[in-house]
Every structure is written in structure tokens, then in C-alpha cells.
Length: 309
Image (cartoon, rainbow, N blue to C red; front, side, top):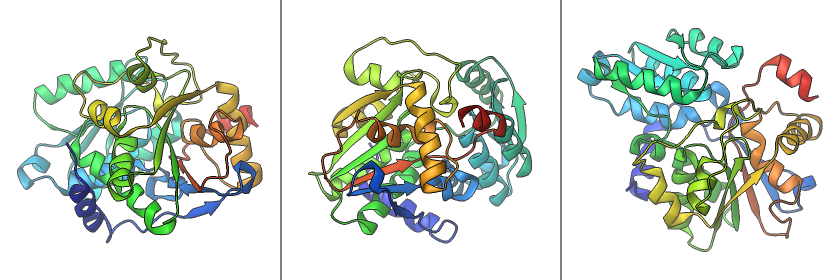
């Protein structure tokens, strides 16, 4: 189990490298609603927190073996950036359908982007096969150091908005919401923590509600796609700390992306907009409570953005 102490230590480890991200008012989503803008973070995603915390925690021997990761996008760029900082080589397995912008982010930081498979699950399987031949695996979510890094978002929200009563968080494998939920609930057990899945990527919703909705790989929420690894440490954390898991549709995500650009002035990817979409379409009630909405990433191909607009 990841503890609040792990998250506090991660915060100290990351502080020299990552300033706190903005908390911005979003009155159109409710008069007491605030956006936690992780799209304004380095690599334009929350993923840098977990990847950097994990890689800075590695021994010299672990770094020397080379880092291997799998990602449909944002974890890839974060691992590449963190590996460059740690002077380590990195191979990132990415689905062939990965947006070009996210592949370019890997190359920008000197890591090797390897396109493999038609979806995230196939890319991850190949990455784990390579780890078996030698290499240091950095999971996008099933890693205590990654979860602790993500949890620093929760600590920041409580510092920036001490009166917060509810937090809405995008969910894929659960690394982000696991960390945020531990931080929020341990600091204030009365805070409600709600996870938001895309209907196309319902893995955590299925686990939380004992459902079997299918994955749909053709989605605006490419960053959220993929099943959850068997035995993932995120599952018991989410079952312990989450108050609810909800779903939003493709059209609701698209409208939220348009809202974020037109009204708030931010480019946000589909997976990063799901929590805002939940409020925009009353999937989560606009009930006047002080609410923080995590905007998890802003890496979207121009062609996709043009289509959405």
C-alpha cells in the first residue's frame, strides 16, 4: 500500500524539478469549481510526476540496465523526459495508432519510440517480454513510486484549495486516482473522490461496479485505453478510497475539449477532459460543493483537434 508519507517524500523529490500546476476557476462548470491543470505540467501531462519520481528513485544499477515502458502516449513522453534527466537510455513501446504528437515527444527527449501492436495491451505485452530479456520496467500505473508521484497532485489541491469537498479525476489503470485519493482521504476523509472513465475505456468502472463493458480502441480517450493488469496495486487502493466511478461518452468528451479551448483557453486531449465532461453534462451533479477537476493532459494531434472543433 502506498502511504501519505510516500507521497510527501515524492513531493520533496520532485519539488526541485516540477513547480505546482495552476488551479483555475471554471464557473461554467459550477460556481465553486476549479480546474487542476496538469496539461500545464512538463511534457503537458500529469504523467511526469510518477515517471520522474520512479526514475529518480532507481539505483545506478537499475538505471544502467536501461528503462523499458509501454504507453499510448503521455507516460511515454514522461519516461523519456525523466530518463534524459537521469542520464539513462529508454525504450518506449507504443501502439501503432498512437497520436504522432506523442511519438514526437518521445523522440524529442532522446528515447527510442517503438511502434508495436494495434492497441495498448499488445504494446505492453511486448514491453514486458523485453523486460524479461533485461531492462528496468516502469509501469504507467502499477508501481508504488508512480502512484506516489501522482499523489502529489492531491497534496497540491489541498494546499491550493483547503475548503475542497470533492475531486473528480480521469481514470485509466488507476495510478493517478489512486495517488490523489490516498492524499485527499488521508488529509481529509470527508472529501469525496470520484473517478471518471470514458465509455470506450471502462476498465476501472468495470472493476468498481462489477460490470463487463467492452473496450473500444477507436476513441478520443486514447490515453485511457487498455485493461488493468492482473494483480495491480491500484485496484485495492481504488476499492478502499474511491466514492464512485462514472462514465462519459465520446460526444461528451468532444464537447468538453471544445469548452476547454473556447472558454478556458487550454488545449486538452480527450482523456484529459473526461472529468470536466462529467460536470459539463451533469453526469456528476453541479451541486455547489467546492470541486477540483483534474485535467490530466493536453497532448492531442492537430488533425484530431480540428475534427473535434
